[in-house]
Image 1 (cartoon, rainbow, N blue to C red):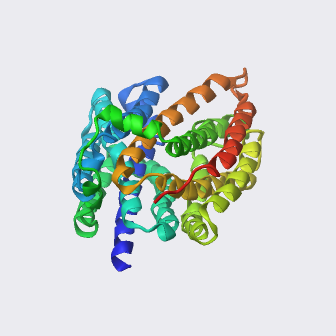
Image 2: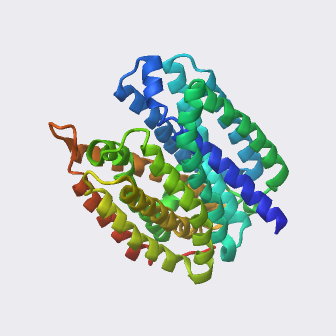
Image 3: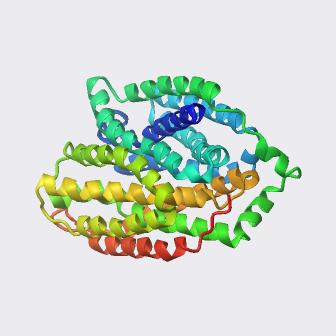
Length: 395
């Protein structure tokens, strides 16, 4: 059990670093736009470049991840990620930083799939929900530390500093991988003939259970990422927050989910993943409905609602991730999770795009139709409940 805990803490550390690497760029927007003299559109490309490259790498990762020892491939992938992060820190021009972000995303997408595959391979189903809760708590820690510290460190020096620190943490994590992640090769002997890449796609898409799991992932992304990208601008333009006060939202939401995420994992193992997923998915629509209809509102009330949104969003993801991971057998798990991760990335981008087409801006600078986006997100969220009941865990 001690080795298992050290493994999970290592995976959580890796997850934390690559999530912060993505999130930290967003609060640095004003400084980057000033230093590089770039437009909001160019800054948006800087942010989305990571997501799209992560989606591409996740897709192509499905064609080779299951061919290797999980530990060896994780080491190589994380070396690439560390070098790309250092490249971000050393960037002196916008094109170089953009290129470094693309490379970071390429390796970041593979990292996510490998983490889930290792949990699925090593942790028995009876403890998988708890393990997933611990590793996914890294997202909460990233929310608490990534956004506020990104602003704080950059204000003390410049925007390069956070990336230098992430590079140092990545090097430490490489040592942890070498020390605490075991060689995982059991999946290699279960499929001697490796399929053609198109066969991998055909195998996943022809499996009704796995396609239901992927559809569940897509609907969850629509239910969440039609809201999240526009939460900050709406809170500033319509609710009356300053840009600095936005950090309160991420700090409060992240702080609570740090403690609730492991608890949700334990409850999933004890009472059933489907039951806990259904409860949190149902609860999640409440803050969505409130947030997307807020006007000028006192800070404490906004923090209460936004924290409930982050807690319930994370609460639904923990059991869902365990359910989705369990739909693939060990010999095909890496391929399936890479494919699923790619689809998630594409769904995230598509959800944001659709929401952006719906949301408008009035003469006063306030965002309009955010409530309509909220209703659409609620629709997709509620559809997840009956769909999840049809997804069967096979390993």
